Image (cartoon, rainbow, N blue to C red; front, side, top):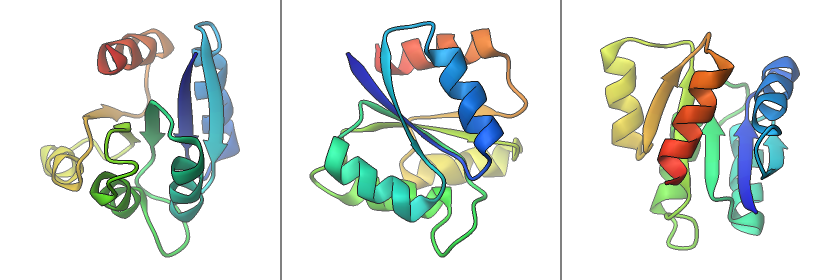
Amino acid sequence: MKKILIVDDRIEIRELIATTLRTEDYQILEAKAGQEAIVITKAEKPDLIIMDIMMPGGIDGLEATRIIKNDPDTKNCKIIVLSAKGQEIDKEKGAEAGADDYFVKPFSPLDLIKKVEEVLG
């Protein structure tokens, strides 16, 4: 069973994503901030992380992505940035941080499932 970590400061977004992905056979983990995402990633080694960018605390989603991708123990975790920031520059920043893909809010649950399946192969 593949593990997916959902990282978003808004519980309703985490619940929506979790509900969407539970139709498939995934183990769902959740974090509400960048630092928490890093800790869970080191401990659980999820196959995929769905990462929001704008979160409270000292570490936003882009910085958490950089940290995860630069750590030899977690660099192979796939990361999809899921953000309301949909400009080309935002997508470039996601790629520079090491994200494997970028998905814009609001999103279609079916499109999210397709994207997750595509990234996980």
